[in-house]
Image: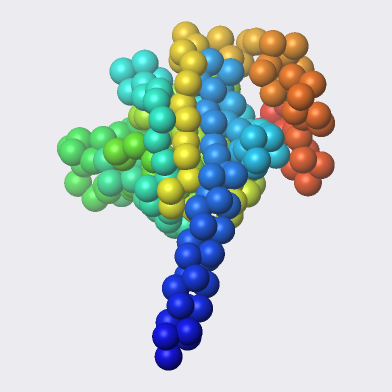
Length: 207
């Protein structure tokens, strides 16, 4: 009985160590200046995605965080749009406490594949206009949000750094994947990206 207990304890310890090690190998870095999010495994970038972070007045906070929660189907409790009785959008960027006309309604903004990392802010699938435009969250193209969602777990480190560009700077600047000062172009990283995740095309649609 004692030997069995010892084996259980040792096995559980090994499992916890392995889990901790796996989490430590996976991390997310968000570069606000380049408007790019990276998934790192073992210190190497295996996925890079364009993003739209918080606009001025709702800036995404820089700092060290971790994934606090994951929710595949999530809707904002604070932001969305207001439509009239015929379903026509009358306020595209609405707050939940705004007055709604008779027959109309407030429709919460979809934030699918939501990965909360700081207060109400999180990474999620969303529309990318080509510049910082969110209320603090980090929007990504849906297929990259899915890949990231499936790769991280609660507790995965998230580092947010850089300065949010002014206006539409990012949409007019050279792609971060081609810039020589991109830190992930350092030779010590070898190939820039895992071949399973091709760099994104120049323009993105939205479903």
